[in-house]
Image 1: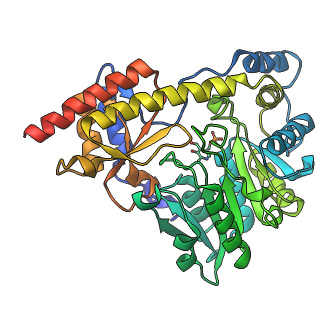
Image 2: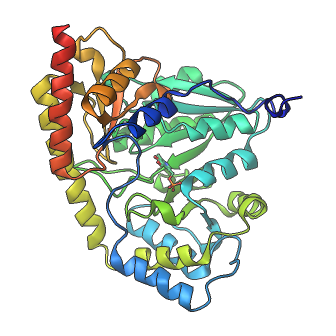
Image 3: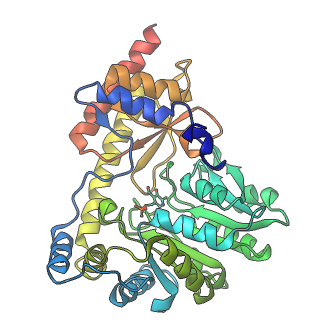
Length: 392
Ligand code: PLP
């Protein structure tokens, strides 16, 4: 028997995934501008790196408490509160090796086969993968330009059944870079309470919002704390993707079993990374303001370029993504084909919305993970490719 035939049925091997195909094309090209992955190009601020180095030198090289070192859990609780979240005790915080790991901890702690989890589409797809691993049923709520790609309570309502258990809200959303307005978050929370749903509120980009947009934390709404798990982490706001520190915050009767599952998977997060995260949470916060200002400048540069070529987009309100509408360019090709063409002819990489569960092949996600001059160059190259396709 070949090893491929020995794999568990939950393993889904796509023949040649579009991203793999694009990465292969990019490997053969020079000077590709990568607007694909959601990994900040910015460096982790120096004082955070230093704290990690010092921790390494002073023996933080062992397993820690499975929920994370106490000072970090205290600092996370304080930070959540300071930014408009709920009040948590340290034993209501679970530090995980990245927020993404937390999604799998949640799914395996809460979902039985046949339970339904409602997810926004397009949305961050590991929520679906985690639910599938738990043999739960993923119920997708399609979103579009009419709500600037954010969920509304009325869109969710028809998808609720007697088997619904979890509702996922990603705010700001990835891949769309959009923020669900606070009054809509309140309506969604009411709906969840009415149907006794647990809400997973992914607020990992909540410190990176633009203009007047702000994120209403679900757990801080009346009656929601006991049914909400807030998922967040240090990767995005502090440019710490490689350190792998995320967290779940929720009521003790959910966080305790999640800590058990997390322990079974990971024992604990690397101590060095936890000490770096502690420095991030307790140190000067101007680094976050500086990053937000930088992303805002990049966002303006990108929108200027898109406006110049006549591409429509969802209004980017938070995170570091712009969700552009390829169909609005009337090129006669879908977003997937456009991405491949743009990479091969323009040496610019971006991802089609289909990989985030978009039900159309109309949109592309552009990450603002390059400095302004590179974004300007990417927009110029993209415009040339668009004009070349139009001229065919
Ligand atoms: N949540 C969202 C919406 C994300 O986009 C990501 C990463 O891209 C994560 C969570 C996970 O981040 P990490 O595992 O680095 O904490």
